Amino acid sequence: MNHPKATLLAKLEDKTAKVAVLGLGYVGLPLAVVFAEAGFHVVGIDPDQHKVETVQQGESHIRDVPSATLKALVQSQKLQATTDFSVIQEVDAVSICVPTPLRKTGDPDLSYILEATDQLTRYVHAGMVVVLESTTYPGTTREILLPRLEQQNGVQVGENFFLAFSPERVDPGRTDWTTYNTPKVVGGITPACTEVAARWYQQALQTVVQVSSAEVAEMAKLLENTFRMINIGMVNEMAIMCDRLGIDVWEVIEAAATKPFGFMKFTPGPGLGGHCIPIDPLYLSWKLRALKYTARFIELASEINTNMPRYVVGKVQDALNSQGKPLKDSRVLVLGAAYKPDIDDLRESPALDVIGLLHQKGAQVSYHDPYIPSLNHDGMDYHSVPDLMEAVRQADCVVIITHHSSYNYVAILEQAALIVDTRNALGKLGKENPKVVRL
Ligand code: SAJ
Image (cartoon, rainbow, N blue to C red; front, side, top):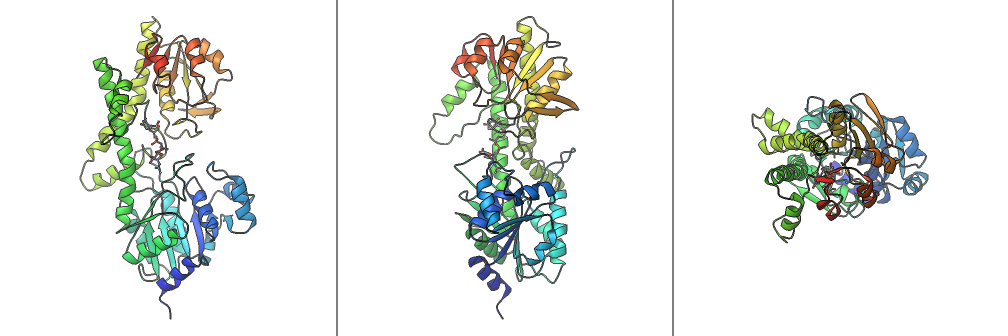
């Protein structure tokens, strides 16, 4: 009789293996589509009935997945969606793409991973490969998933059941690097797990990079995003130091960026937003604290980045003060609420902190964001101002938080009484202008 590994490998290579993707978010839906386009029969499983229904109707709720693409795959039966986890009984390969946020305490929230694992535990069977994609601390795959899955239904990891980690590398909105062509790291609990998971992903993705263990794969992702978080923190501190020195940090960065090697440009800003960069490194520092080690770079960078909204509000206060206006009762217009330009994602956005702090200090705060019609922060409801230029004219101070490319910065500069530009969105236009204050 064929060894279970050989049997599974054959099904993965001839695409008769049935694939499931748990979690149909910005990682899971594009991955489900890529597997279906490669020829696998894919079932997307998500507890959100509405999400499942829209996928079944061929409507995409993820900007990176065109509805036309989705509709064609659903109509050809290559891709289905369901809330019913029991379909896993018929499935040979499962990819887990669920959120890994932080709790209010700042500790990792593994509840989504645990829920997915508990469902898997009920239906896991011999002859399966399971890959975790959700960013998490090193050891999660081996310490959390393996013990729960291995108890069931006679599965033996590395023998008739294969478990690996493969970090997601989705950058929503990016079109040059996609789920298909972004190199994908894969590391298993055992060498056989790495082999089976890598062989599966090689059927659908352009480049698969095998590493020696799940821990290496988990840690590689954390290095990628910790690298960004720390460098953003460093350049934010550079901005603070240049401010103290009376030096233009933006000019300093442009000059340093002319170095063709050994330097990578980062720019200061009002803080660190998004669902990855501010969060993933804290999974690592949390794990190390449990091992009695303090990840000082992560903690320092997090402290600097977290303080940037307060630093920006201080700049607004000083700028108004220079015009003889107290911050209290001044009209302050925040431009851009999303966490980065040209997207509609508010998660961890520093704009929320800036709005909250301005409100606390008694300013009359309003905001504009073409992608975000309304938001709620600290129990307060805000709506994007309907007439941007009218709001600019009426504001005592305009603070540019997220520099969407759709803004007409020349017109804003002409009509604003005072601008605090935290992104150097005005560039040279703002450099010498007395009514512009830059980070
Ligand atoms: N930011 C700065 N200065 C910088 C770069 C970013 O203040 O020089 C701020 C942004 O405004 C934002 C936050 O940091 O608030 C995060 O920005 P980001 O460019 O890192 O964008 P993300 O959060 O969408 O990061 C994603 C990540 N992708 C994955 O985790 C798979 C990240 O690894 C990518 O490098 C990044 O996209 C990218 O390159 O766009």
